[in-house]
Length: 82
Image 1 (tube, rainbow, N blue to C red):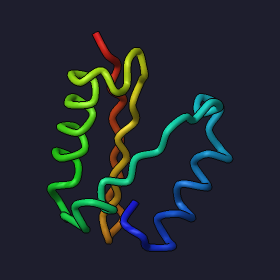
Image 2: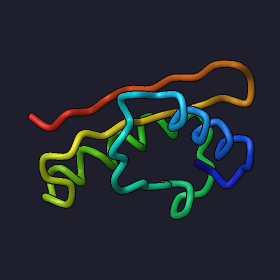
Image 3: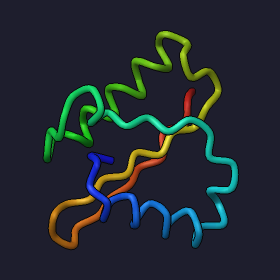
Image 4: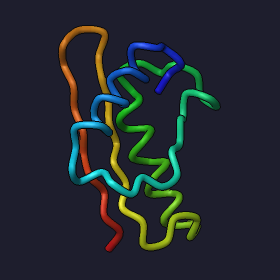
């Protein structure tokens, strides 16, 4: 989420339509601290999740990294602690 209202609308639609995202816990918005980093956002989000696991700030929590381009490309990856 980078502050654009269209991203919030997409995320809201995902939450309404998905049956697997019932108990969404903490939402982290890296753009609040890093700004909009564009194409690097996926890699930076993965690094943030890994570091949160390493520092025990997200113990036993699954993470969903969701990215969207200005075009139609979308992507998501689920990260599960080992």
